[in-house]
Length: 482
Image 1 (tube, rainbow, N blue to C red):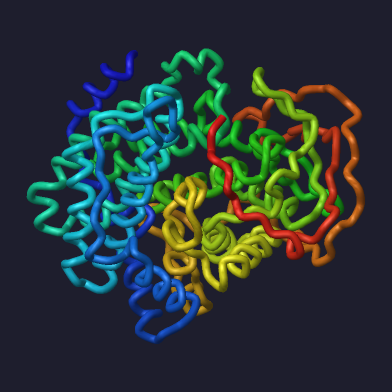
Image 2 (image 1 turned 90 degrees about the horizontal axis):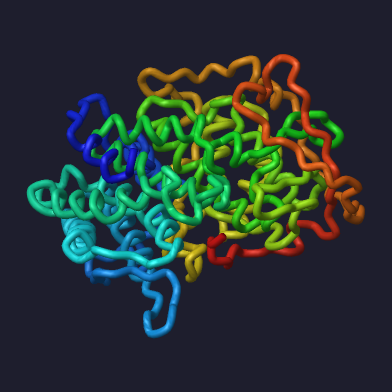
């Protein structure tokens, strides 16, 4: 089925009424919690909020930079201008959040002006494949902003349709085209690294919720579970290995042989997808024995300066026989979310995720910042962030926790492999071990992952640290291309 036909069918379907709003990265309960913490001037909420309201992307005087064509790269006489979109997406979200928290309509109006302007002007993206990065990354951000002001009457009356029509015709079509592997470069469905598919999955899911389109929402959920590309969770976390010392099961991320900056982006996007689904009553966090967490523990352990097993990886195009140390220790504002969900909501033992959350918060000045607050360059706008404001929980919050309707906070026995793991306070200083085999393992399939009798992959190398993560800190500054 072609993408165009699929989209026609999608919009002929009746919208359902079971969706929760706001119900993407921010919910009404999140807003209530933030208001309570700010009223008491508690940190890290207060410091995070002070930062948010101080930056230019959070002011009611912000002027949009909408254009008709967005280019991620400069090619010949065509100059890159994607920063216009990522700046405006960040501003629309920040302003929408200010309206929800403060109640001042000037902020909703400013956010609506941004989204409506892009709805009126945007018609085109790059000729090359880079357009799929922009439509995925900024796509889900724009919809998250729109979700915050969906009940602002002036936007609902006029701007919402303008924005929705543009998104359907210009952005969603590209999200679906890419995820259906119709691009010429996708003759191998695993051609692209995980982050490419994950951002497009996040965009489709967000728009499904925003427009109350069950088919779009279900598509993104099912692709997460059973898709054939690297965005599917069993490909994004490509191998299961045993942690040295504890024997605990951890998951090797698909991009870990490439570099740590892009691998960190994978977890930022996995967090977006899982949280959007969670807020609609679908638990992808715990799917397949909490495979997101298995990967997060692996990533955090290595990026804190410790050794991890590595299984040779290929997607038929690239081949990696050892983990990459490039941008090791890179951080992104996503670890407050992962820690809050797995440790505080689910009650799992997550030693490396907790330590990496602490590392990220400390590196960012005491709280996780958000887009527009912690640097320039595309990598700083790949996610909306503000995790300390939106997701940080204290003991009173944990005591009062209850799951969203239709969900469960109970932990299956298969997830209990994480319980009892011991955090390592010392940093290994042994030298890297060169791989001794060229064996290329088959990616673990859905049916076999953590099933009875599963044989875990035997690593061909184990890389350990030469420096403490606290002594050498890298901020992710790479573009997220192939």
